[in-house]
Image (cartoon, rainbow, N blue to C red; front, side, top):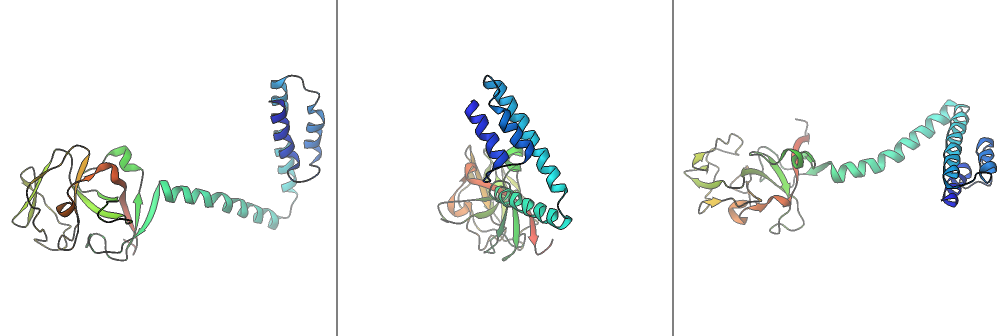
Length: 228
């Protein structure tokens, strides 16, 4: 532990240089006078604070232009990994290549997918979710949630029925834009029944059957371009 504490202090004081600042070098010079592991760790921690204050004092003596440049570079270096993390695990922009969700989402729209909140609130009726499916390999698919576990879904007379009640669907591409769903489907546990808003062109649970909830990796948050 003493060796690790000294190595950390040396790296902080000198970095790639042969010699660091006077405060840091003083802390290094007296490190070997410590006894025991925990005294060495406490001394190293004190040395790190001294190095931090020393560097802060040095930065304050630099010209304003240099300080601004250093701050901008530091912010950029922090922003890049933060942006990667946000894009992969929090909010992901998507480009819409097809018209299966028109008119809600148009071809060439840019949208933002929320990859976190649905895991906390659960998936609800009417949510537009993103998922992957073996029927469309290599692509993220966007559809609207119509049925949750235990629901019975059927189509007749140009309307979709959930547990016998016709669904109001003002978002459809056109009145009566609902093709046959085939035999009534009861959604099993852990699954969803999903449909596109443009029923005449959409491939969805009418062809695939229900999809596993575990396949969902995000929920539509908003359209970012064109501006709403």
